[in-house]
Length: 110
Image (spheres, rainbow, N blue to C red):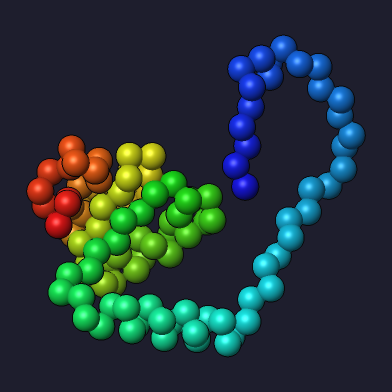
């Protein structure tokens, strides 16, 4: 979910209706997970190089601890987009830099 606020939002009076917020949980199935794994494996079979490009959504979905643990276990080159700079450990030996499109250094573009 993305929220876009107009610039005068701070001047708008707020009507509060205290109520607990509930988050809908996605319906996940083992079959869809297995189909994803098979499709990803098929796509990755023929590539020469693989790397991870992380962004702020990693934190939003509470996956930063899991991602960093995986990056420590699987020695794979990884970068972050500018808004996700704090998502991965920039001192990690496999961290290649921040991806900035055409302005990126060559090792990040690869």
